[in-house]
Structure formats: structure tokens, C-alpha cells
Image (cartoon, rainbow, N blue to C red; front, side, top):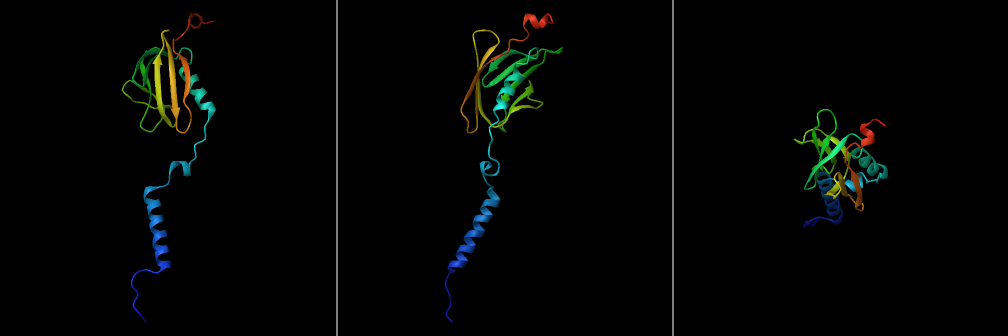
Length: 149
């Protein structure tokens, strides 16, 4: 018998398969492979419905990519609507506490106040989806809501 030097073809393939398996275990697979993103069209409209709820919020100001609102409850607290580090559009208090998620997988959101007080142009981008655009009415209650009609 002669001494071999190196690996045989089968040993090389086995080592390659083990290395690939360890690499997948340590780095994980992409989120798109394990949990494909399904676009829920209703979720976009629910975000608008929550923000435009009559008698709930009134526009305070826009600071960068953060929308600052005032609640129209007894306490008139200030709340913020922004995207967090986990790509969730959420509502928090002014100290960034609390967690009310509005929409997942939000890559970017831009707020632009319009000339009419209380109207905001909103642009929102979710992963792998086109930009969504709308005008939010955050003027607070109207006269008919105040009178109870």
C-alpha cells in the first residue's frame, strides 16, 4: 500500500457540506427565505384610520422624520409617531416610552406639513413595496364634533 497525500473526492465533498452547514447555522438564513413578506393592503388604511380618528389627535409639529401630535383627551399629552430601530412605525410618548405599533417593515417615512394648518403630506416606504403617499387630516375636532352633532 502506498501512502496517500491529501483528501479523496468524497472526503472533500463531505468537508464542504459540513462547512456549508456550519456557515448557515452561524449566520442564519435571510428573513425572505424563512418568512416571506406578504403585503397587507388593509394595514396601510388602518394606519391612516388610527391617526385621523376624530377627536383623538391634533398636529403639534413635524421634527425631521417624527410627527409630534397632541392628544385631545383631558391631559393633552404629547405623542410621537416615528419608525424605531426594528422598522416599526409606532406611537410613543414624548420620552419615547410606550409602544403602540402601527405598521411593520417600514424603511422610511417622511412628513411634510402643508399650508393649511393640521394637514400633513405623508410618504411611507415599506420593504420591497413602492412608496405610499397620502394627506393626513390632523386638525382635531371640527365644530360639528364639538357641538355633539
